[in-house]
Amino acid sequence: MTLKVIKKIALISGSETGFRKELNIVSWNGKEPKYDLRSWSPEGIALKGLTLTEEEAKELQKVLNEIFTEQAE
Image (cartoon, rainbow, N blue to C red; front, side, top):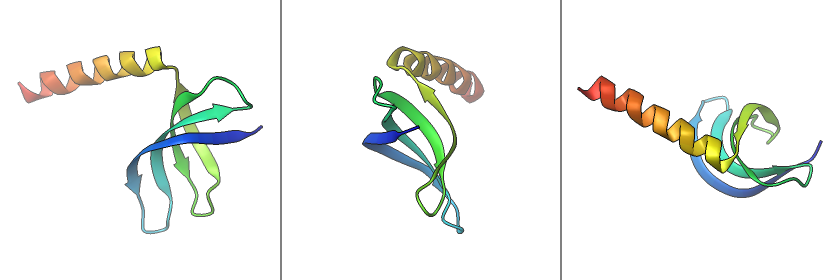
C-alpha cells in the first residue's frame, strides 16, 4: 500500500514522545486524493486514521458545527 501526502493542512496535536495527529490531503495507491486525519509516529510512519472525500468532510463539518453551536448556547 502506498501513501503520498499531497498537501499538509494542519497539525491537530502532538505529544512529548513525538507522535502527532495531522490533517492532510493524501492519495492512497495512486487513487483520488482525500482528506486524511491520522496519527503519525516520530519516524513518519502512518498509523490508524480516517480518510474522507470532500463531500464526507463537508458533512462532518456540518455535524461538528451543529454540536459546538448547541454546546455554546
